[in-house]
Image 1: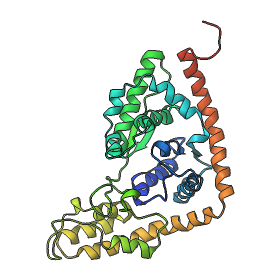
Image 2 (image 1 turned 90 degrees about the vertical axis):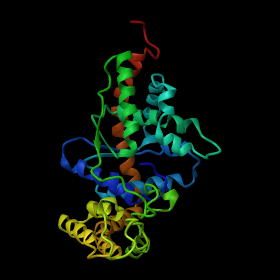
Image 3 (image 1 turned 120 degrees about the vertical axis):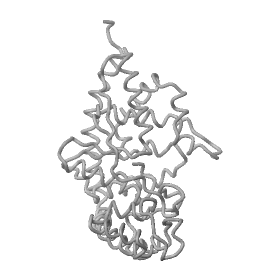
Image 4 (image 1 turned 180 degrees about the horizontal axis):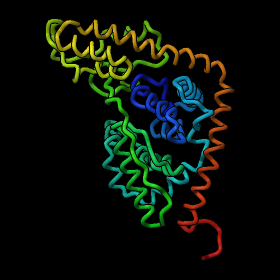
Length: 323
């Protein structure tokens, strides 16, 4: 995730929570990256970036990413990412990049569209292939980018030899979370989010007027949980028996939307409060966070350079005797 400000509920339920579960499963060696180089594809405040990076790292750790079990680092501290992105760009057609839905959405109505925004998926492919990743946990909104990374992998291997394994997607089990306004996915720029550091009172202030089933105009109207964003959140944070109760009471109009939101608030607070408290504690120890990130970057540089040594040789780059 990009360090573009405080992480929100959509980041947590759609990605971070799944990452923690994946890391704790013990199935894989996990590498987690704060992608600051991706964050400069649009205008940003350089003075704010260091704080945002540390704040994101604090929330990663507070949510359950254990640096003693997984690698956690900052993208720009491993410069092989951008080097590999250049090499991969040589096998990536411009037409493929132009078809990326997220580029079209982000470029729309912008007076200035950077080349970096256009080539963003190539750097994402480098983030993945640099470590010869086998599994990439993604949400539906990033699946198109991962498919392009797989295509780039195939093209590079076909032209220069089998260097990269083809990464497989691991889709999030949480359905795409819409914003509180019900108009678009959760996004800080749209102001439709719940921040992970917000207090119980702040969470309720945002949750109370949140958009629900548009066809439920009166309390006596039966609801449709399958189309309600509040119910999607319930499935992500509430126990199964509570989810079943919510479903039954919504469909039977035994509960109004406010009742449903009050129960959701209870379980959101229960899940997010330990994260908020731990993150605020970590923020008081920035030196400790920097040490963790630097140690992670050192481990990644070794892995990355092994891959780049193979890639440069395959491309015929560098001062060397002809074979």
